[in-house]
Length: 184
Image (cartoon, rainbow, N blue to C red; front, side, top):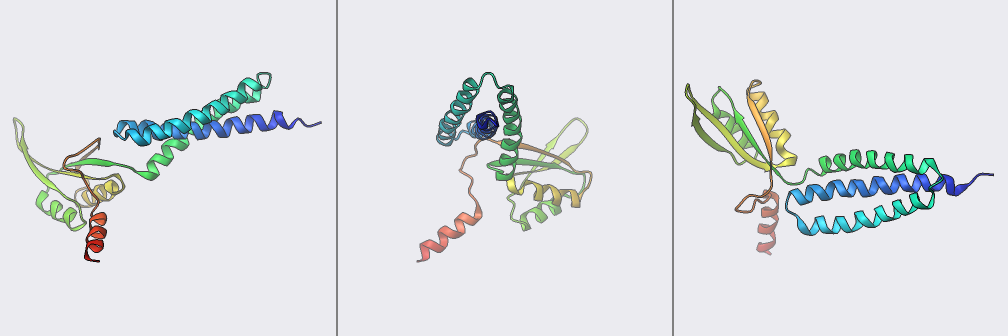
């Protein structure tokens, strides 16, 4: 006779671990971005789900499949959590571009696409360097990099995360909606 608990428990454990680890991955990213409220809320649900999963493991100590499901759920939860975070692309990143070509032209191309660009000058012992610096939503970083690569395939591009920026960065779309609402 088929024991449904022996089949259901590992499946439940695996799905619960996928859920709690995925939530935990997003929570850790929110902590790194300084989003305390969302991180706390996610942490609450993460722990509740974890307690349900570990409770099933202890209830089924004689079922080796429960242990394997726990490990598999952890591994898949990390993978899925990172995938979700990449799709959400929350926050901002700094894109720095150094090229030997005319940066004013590249700066103009980026501005035409809606990027706010700062052109900076620096020097080392041998030469003067120009580079472009922009802070942009993560969802638009690949677009900025594509424009720079099309302009100069040998451009040096570095990207790093922004925890915070002052004054507060806002999406241009949001300002447009506020302007429309103010008119009414």
